[in-house]
Length: 467
Image (cartoon, rainbow, N blue to C red; front, side):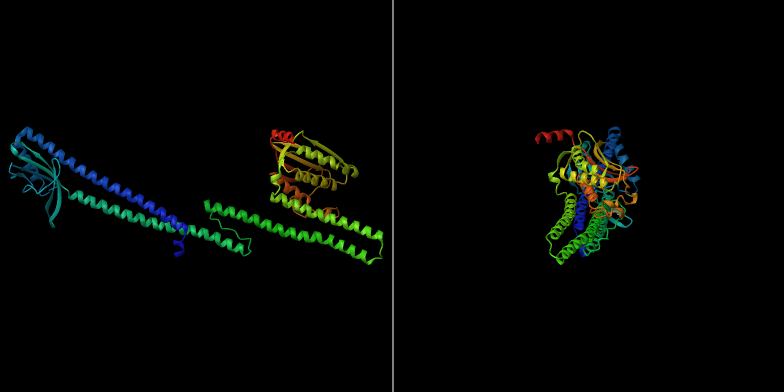
């Protein structure tokens, strides 16, 4: 309970409770005074109606007729003093009515008085108050018509008690509701804290529980779980990359070291030393190529080169990369065709896009023993779409997603030079540019597809003019 009282949720609930209680109190006070004013006006209206009727009787029948009516009405009440009547002479001596004497009254306003009243009931005399109006008749006679305020006072007392209990019940329910809501909120926050503590201790499989209500806490928990899923995938990918690096680099490093040891153990020979150094340099270049590819992937995934992006022509980049690989295709006896739109403006990094397209073409030429390779770049539905299609053996459908992971190589390509990072770089570049990359059937062969959001053509023209 102490911890509950110290929470911001409880303080906020208490603040709202105070504002709500003040609002309810103001409403109850308004209701009370409105009710009291209504009762008072209703009493005055009743007295005015009585006086008006009696005045009309006096005008029609004179003083004897008025006395007769007063006597009849006083007798008809049989001890009920809700309505008070009294006619006196000029000396205030009672003539008719249900009051024994002219009361010791307090002047309220012109024509209206208030006075204490003792009423006889079955339980004995009861003190009450009365409100009356005085009407002066000719020859000094006075007419008093009033109302006993016991019923009005009782009604006001009942209203006061009812409003008091209502206010107390409102505050009690508000406190109970505030405690319940605060406890529920604290329980949800504690669930997040417990999950966070387990994750800090190293258990990345923990997730914040959802209640299924769809409220803001569920939305927060869903976003946290999505973030944790992403972190877990990144950590798993990092471990896989570390394992793959250790596995894939151990062999060339061991081969390089063995070659140097063998060279040192052999009879000194300048020609042999030169050959060993050339092979060592070539092996070192392959290792540097692997590390450079990893660095490019890391830069693309981190978005560190996003600031250097500009509007470039993807069609022009595709033509340049295609022309660069035409000699490689000719050397392997493959037909390389290039089919591009005139302009495909995209907002991106020219170097990374060139490297991604070069990786796609290099893979297509490398794994196509005979046939053709086609490079196509076209605008489709507001996107720039680049396709590299070959007539090679292709990739099984269940492995097309896996080959985008780092260092993943199919069994048939183990003997082919490469490090298994080409497609990983292509996907990283696609994500950096807000696009996608995937593989699909070419029937026969494989088709690699890269799509990027297309930029405004006028922006490309402005960039060229600035250059």
